[in-house]
Every structure is written in structure tokens, then in C-alpha cells.
Length: 209
Image (cartoon, rainbow, N blue to C red; front, top):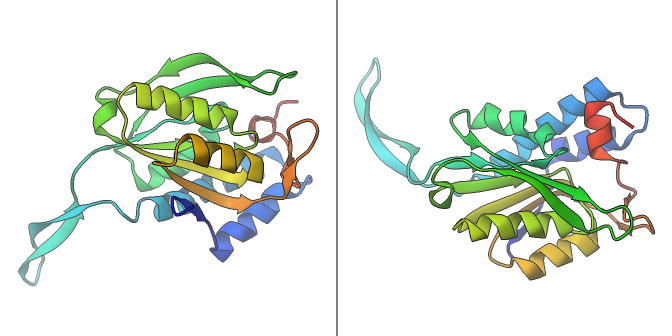
């Protein structure tokens, strides 16, 4: 679908390969997730509007482009989505940050909301929703549902790894949002983990089991 963008940049591919390695420790894993967040954000925001402003350099006065229009908000899906936030804020330090907390039922694999805190005027902002893994797609669909219920109309979802099943579910539920995927993997296994994937992103980011 034309609202989905699969990253082809060699730096993104290289860093995702390092993420997959089971020998990559917590510190390096966390750094890589943040760096990939920056690289993906760079691509996701290439359509930001600009306006010309007057600037006087040491040589001459001229009209030059600066960002215009709506402000940004970054709304990670807890907890793994937190790992991508610093990388995004490195490029967009003035963006407001909110949180959506969802956990996955171990039997049904469906998401359940346990926390939501959003910035003021969220409906007037361009919203970036980062989550490293798009597996079944349930959490992503529910997070976007929540944001749309708050009036959000300009939403960009970012994931590092996606399964075809989850991507299809998100595309069909929300064909109007932009979806940015670091790498589209093979499938989900019987436990709804992405194959080959990289394991549990939250556990590897925070060093938990």
C-alpha cells in the first residue's frame, strides 16, 4: 500500500542485523534502537511543511526555509517504544512526549490498555507512534484507535521489525496513516513472535527477562 514505507538505507539494515544478534548486550541494543529511531524519523518527517523566513548571515540577508505548521508529538507504546524516543528527540527536541501503555494477553495475544497520558492539543499535532515490534498488530491498531478518538488526524507509525500479519492488520484498520518499517520479516510463530525477529524488544532494551 502506498502509505507504507520499508526502509532500504544500508545503515538501517546494518543496525537491525546487529539488533538480531543474541550476543548483542543491553547497552548496545539500547543504543542501536535509539539510533534506528533517529534514522527512521529522518525519513518519516521528510514531508514536514516549511516556510521562508528572513535571515541575516555574516555575508547577506536572504529568505531561507524553516519548519512551519503543526507541532510534533511522540507517543511511544509502552514499554519497548520508549527505546526509540531519545533518537527521535535528538532530531526534534521540541516535540512533546506522551505515553500509551498496552500489555499483551499471554493466551489470546490481544492488547489491553493500562495507561494513557497525552500532551495538550494532541489533535492539532503531527503524531509519531514508535514501537520496535509490529507482531500481531493489535497494540498498534488500538493505539491509533485511541489517538483518533482524541481527534488526531496526522499519525505516523514507526516500527523496526514487522511481521506481514501485523502490517496487514494495521494497514486494513488504518489506511489513512503513514507506516514506516525498518524491516519486514517472514512471519509470526505459534507464540506470536516475529520470525526471525530479535526476541522480546522490551526485555532486551531494559535488561529484563
